[in-house]
Amino acid sequence: MEELRVDNCPKNDDVEDDDRPMLSSQALAALQEFLAEQNQAVDADRRETESEAVALVAEDWRLSQFWYDALTAETVAKEVVSLCGADSDCRVACIACPTLYAYLKKIGPDVSAKLLEYDKRFEQYGSDFTFYDYNQPEDLPLELKNTFRIVVADPPYLSKECLEKVSQTTSFLARPGNSYLLLLTGEVQKDMAAELLGLRPCGFRPQHSSKLGNEFRLFTNYDPGMRLGGWEQEN
Image (cartoon, rainbow, N blue to C red; front, side, top):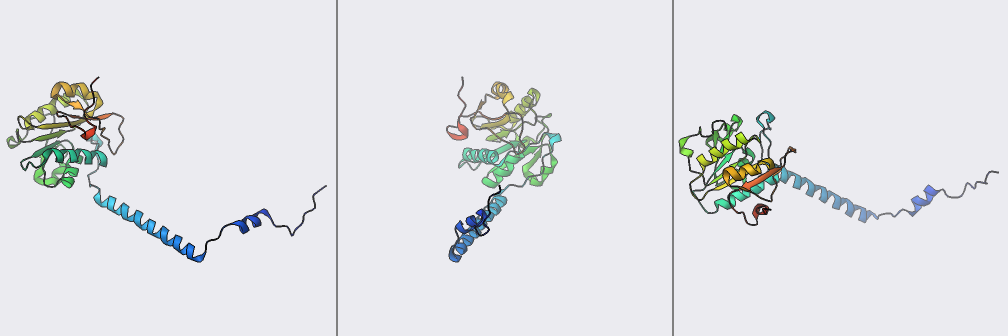
């Protein structure tokens, strides 16, 4: 037997509608104003981030080009600026790392930096650009020999031959005596970096804007102290 339905009983939806809290016109206006201010703040932050971004040419994977992400580029650039300190004669060589060069000129515009790069699109940097082919590691202008206090290198390939030739270039460029060397390359080159250049890995792990399968490391010939995550402790 069917139940007797009483039509004048309120339906569940009607009960829920009656129970919903209602904002006063003043509270609703205040809420809308708050949300508008939040949206303006988000838009302002986005515009500021976009204005601070460093413009780079597109990666050319045929040349094994993989740009650092912003955190990596800023971290290494700040380290270089810190190493230069108040030395007005400090010169920095960036071997095959145009991302670093671009961020370095943004963070430390007064730092004298030279980009050594195979890709001639970077001729846009004028006299700061020098063509470089790692297959001819010392085929460089003689005025660059032994004149750089800081040399940062990112060999384009993860091979023993490439690292050996880039090592020749760093020796050609570095100022005799107290010079700083930073090498960004794959974890697989750890032993070769130590053997060829006397470098040790730091705790900081470089990252690229295009995620790579190879684990990358930052190696130095000096103790960075608390910076760059410090030197990795030897087992």
